[in-house]
Length: 105
Image (cartoon, rainbow, N blue to C red; front, side):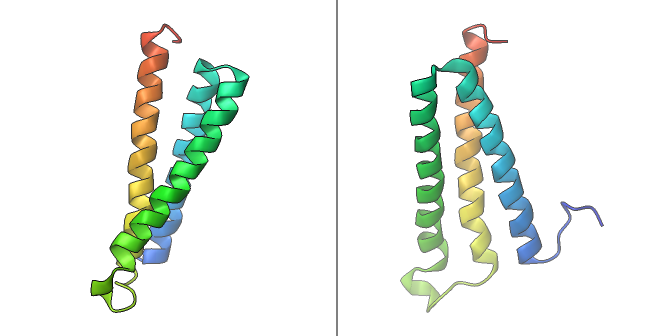
């Protein structure tokens, strides 16, 4: 079985976390490419906080709301990871555009 073809929620979550880490590495590389050291530190800290807050908000929204009677279930635990990935994809797209548009490539 291919690593990306998981049949369990835990397996899907593991792969989604790995994808988000890969996206973070790409975001970090683009930040390093386009900003000075002080800005890099500030931006990387902001991205880390955004990741945490996006995940926490989505976790409550999708899996711990009053309609779930406790928890919505294991599949709902994937949605916060996906929201974090969407946010990371959008940041990466913006940084790639900036670096490309300003001649960084």
